[in-house]
Amino acid sequence: MERIETTRPYARIARYRWWVAALVVVLLSTLILGGRGDAATAYDAEETGFLGLINEYRKENGLRPLILSDTLTVASEHHSEDMAEHGFFAHNTEKSSYYPAGSKPWDRMEAEGYEYNTAKGENLAVGYETAEEAMKAWQESPSHNAAMLDGNYRVMGVARINAPGSVHGWYWTTDFGGHVDPSAHAPGKDPEPPKPAPADAGQPAPEAPEQPATPPPAEPREEATAPDKDANELENGAMGRLGAWRQEARDGADLIHEEGYARLGGYHDGLDDLRQKIRVGADSRLAYDLKVRTGGGQPADRMLVRLQDGKGETVAVLRKHTGREAVGWERERVDLSRFAGRTLFLSFHAQTDGGRLTTFQVDRVDLTR
Image 1 (cartoon, rainbow, N blue to C red):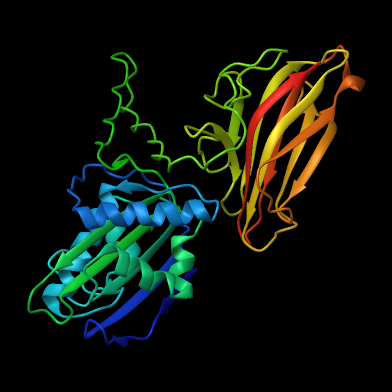
Image 2 (image 1 turned 120 degrees about the vertical axis):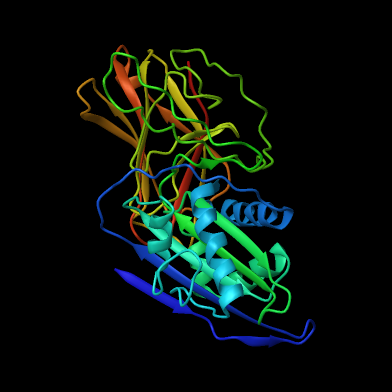
């Protein structure tokens, strides 16, 4: 399925420029292939500044941050260079020093080694020198704004090219992908090299592990900081690390973040589960902090707080939170005394659909008696 949307150019009177922006959002169904991961590139201050701007914007909308993919950046840079040198502005390559004529965004990504069966997209803009200008232009275009706030994306390539004497002067390309490839890294860090296979394994070396996104600054919290480890048969309710929690996420993301809370959902068709074995005492009470962020209220998006047995069967649904709530941090409490003496799994289970995104943030989980 392909969907290509473009905006119409208009004059910027203050700077006497014309700008145009364009977007393509693509979901492909090709074979899953490993990328080369051999790209390497440098980023200027405006390019890394744009990464900061888009991640702050995503954070405001309850989305995970993006990290840089050098492989996608090479594709972005080459396309910006081609547009500047050969005098065109379009998603499809008209003339190129790198790709066949007619190449589409996903063709260029694949040519550089990003060959994964995942969501892919591209934003283009010309005539803007700074990250703030490009960001504002894309925010004011519904289709481009949707790309920047797409929860399926996890990595981004970004390139800003200046060509004095060219038609537009400045050329921006941002390429997005849903798979964290081996060239991906946080700004200021290098991609982690692949780990070699054991000498007797007789198999190719595995790909490098996915790099966690550098988290944005933590939001202010009125509550006091909880300790790293909680007593009463529950470990790490402060969400400082994974610890005793077991996590499963359909998109493979880490559910516990360095900010010190768990984040479930925040992407389309998501299925996340965070659970831990507990021993329920005679007077046990479950308490946890919850924050729900949603884009317009999604009753189909939900998070169940439940107890399960060792076979994964649900014993009880303690609470059901939906995308309708959209509340700030609130303290939830549940009486567990009816399960006294049992060893069960406490589970936070989130499911999201393909509509507007909902994020469920959980913190300060503990059992009190």
